[in-house]
Length: 149
Length: 149
Length: 149
Length: 149
Image (cartoon, rainbow over all chains, first blue to last red; front, side):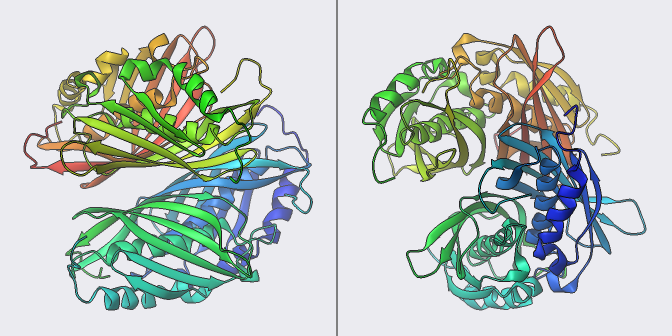
């Protein structure tokens, strides 16, 4: 991860994120793109809860998966796209809070397979609280028509 | 899993599902509740896609997690609630199709920890296509105020 | 998975298994190879226990990983090798018993990525008892010198 | 994780580790015990390889699971034992090298469920190389006869 293979990695991540309709639907915003690291934030929403009024684990997964995937995309060559092969998430504390921060980071770059780790935090008045952690395996997809970013 | 501990297991699952706001938001419906098995269906929605126009992996996770969790709740005693500790999902094929079926089944019941497996299928004109598989670990929560179902 | 791509798939699995020194060390034997399904058996051994006298979770993982990997290899073309990208295992019951059966099955074949599921059973006088389940992601490796099977 | 609940946490981990026969069998040694962090080391062994001559992924899992589990035990009260519910491991590079270092750390302590993360490194002449990462979910077991440590 010495050198970004694409000088346009920030634009590529932003353009792809803008095409993820689900991010708009749930109110998530891309707040930080670095080489191998991406941050997304979203407010609490009553429309996205499970039965106890917490953010549904799947919604935490949705944003963490995007954070992990875009961290991976940021280290890929220009003519490639990213696909999630699998991920695992541990729910460490209930998804309760005013705002949430999701950070994805590349743990192991690679020419075919990239592994990213993600962490979700609830943000309020006090210190940020770790509420979930993810490990995801991403695939570098090349030359498949219609797949970009 | 010989005998349902609660004769009201179908009602308990239906009542809890009805309180998951996120299910309404994404258009998911509970279509089948059996002892240790739950099915949820949803149509494709353009509002829930990732950058290539497929259903976002996190949305598949959201519904599969509910299916796995409610399969677990169906085998729990009445005075308990279900919480997801962790899950892993493998994305086997792109989330493309008209409708999707999500099935969760209890693999291992237990008094504290229950393990469920889930599978997601894309449904159209032809045969159902397996698009994702999940294994989830659920906790039986007792006597925690405000947590029910 | 209609047609075995290699008519030699049983020989390929057996030859590769025979090169896994760790299988000899822990006393595991390949007992069944079918197209997309592999079974391995091993006796309980006091040399492989954790602190409570049960078979260590990592030993169950070792055999399940081989079962999942060889199920995957059985559906690969001849000139390829199999590498495990990642797996997840749930320990459902203590690893106690006289003998253990491990079955790996291909859930999703693919030209680059194959997903297998595995289950471990304790075998004694009564019915087989499910003690662990695994999902593994395997990579099809081609043309890498020194890697075969 | 402010205060060790047991002043004997180092002894408890060492005593339990000494009862894990499999650690002796594979040549693993406990080299560091801190509050919430444990390190184990082992040399390469030709008896523990997969078909390409690398350390088998399951052996890496065995030691990482012990490292994660003992990190968890170090933060548990005295009268409890640790059991692994599940773990996921990503194999990042082949298990090749002279010696291997495995570090487990508690990510989220809890009175019933503890989550640990582990990393495995190959150690030789150059810098340590990250070869595997694990997330494990551990259960705090109390008052179950015959289970200690």
